[in-house]
Length: 249
Length: 303
Image (tube, rainbow over all chains, first blue to last red):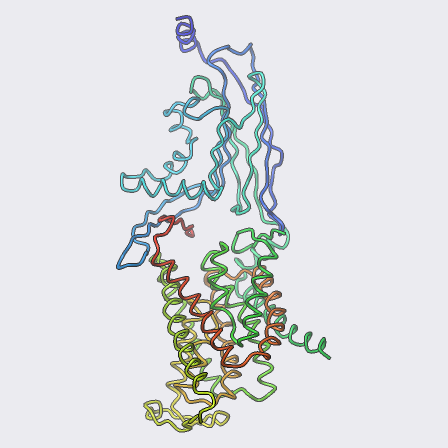
């Protein structure tokens, strides 16, 4: 009964100001030749004008979102004895990487209405671009299943460490098969499923060194790149022949 | 040691690539084939996207065929006019193959198309080689009859041309068609096509064996080089980093393979090669027939 009353008071009173101060361990990730994934640390604290309310408890959700790309999801069917692609669904934009880390299970700390508003959970980030019809649902589910298996979609409840209802931190690991571009980091504070504050920052993921040079050349000067590939193949093929001939003598 | 491939955009173990290149080089040195038919499926198996596997496979074949072509050229075992005609056909076939590849990827059937081509061609060629070499093993000891002049439909076509090194006076249409077929395969399968061209040159065109290998290597070098360029310019799918590692492994493997190959009998080599070709065809065939673990697939499309 007491709790119920307190909840009522909280709903009537204006939501108390709680502001996020946060940092990310690095502002950029360089994809070099030896790149094998990266780990980023997101940390921060809740700043308050007044003591924190004791109930409902503050929860933290942290998301990292890679650049969105258009996708085609295809389904194989058994046709005349062999398996071939039949049905397909186009997605105008789905994040190439998406991680959700939180203090508790998402269902317990975020109301569906708030999720819809901020596009926080994985299905919401995909639905944000294209509302699925009933027959598209299995395709959207398959996309999530495949991306979760490959480590491109990460669901990590209970992975945000929250100290004294104020300090929080989490580690998010980025897989090796990263797409270049800006990665959006969002931090949400929730109370009773409602978003109290949100903060957004950015990490730039870029190919560096040889990777960058080769990629740029392949995209911007494809003919030069192609000729260079041929030259390399010819020199290597011919050079090895000559080298082994000398070694034999 | 993990290595990030800039075009394929996957991270793979560098030693796996060197080993793969070495293995293919060993086999290609031993059997005298380019090895493209092995490299493309193997790259796909380790997670390289099919488009990159086909284009980079073609680039690797350039390296493995050029040294052979140069060596044969010094030995005067290349029929240059024949090589030029075959290359002309090959360039046309490769261009057509590129269009068909584009069409298939728009229809979402790239995988099926590549897989079916592999099953069909490798199955056919493998079976032919196996039966042929088993028959010739049985025949050893008996007198072999070689017909030097076979007058078939090949000799009744117009646009005849003299091919001095091959001792042939035939129409340019059959070699153009053979070249085109091989160029087509090169574009869609990422292979050199020696396994199709060598039998076609012997049985269809009636070329003498001494110029067959050199002339086919000559054509393969040019056509796979052209295929590499076409893929690089239109699809941006040639991964130089990947190609470099495969080539380094490949050229070393090829030299070792060539030395092992010398110790084996030609018939034994051909039986082994045909078994290898059939094994690849059967493996890919099973992938089409067996229920896949995951029915769905996700493809990134260009915006």
